[in-house]
Image 1 (tube, one colour):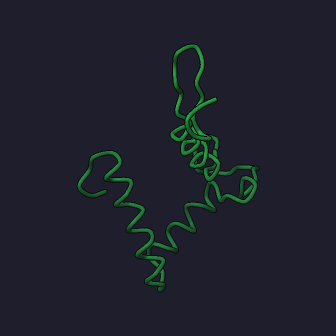
Image 2 (cartoon, helix red, strand yellow):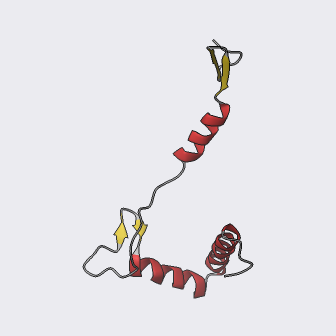
Image 3 (spheres, helix red, strand yellow):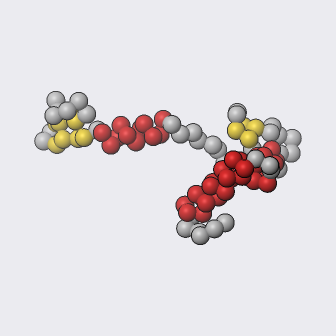
Length: 92
């Protein structure tokens, strides 16, 4: 076997599995949301399982960004900053 519970050895090579376990740990806390072609739900549902989509998402985003709750306003601003940083923009 290997040196630690997270190391495999065979064929003259050691494989350290800590990084792989960390990666799968991060992936286990994520969700996949399929792509949607537009924001208009003509004849469709307002949500995709428990995720808001389409006009319902846009309305909620607008309410959170412009509503009376400062906490929600700050969250929307933080999301916009994070998206901007992700794509290399100074502001959106």
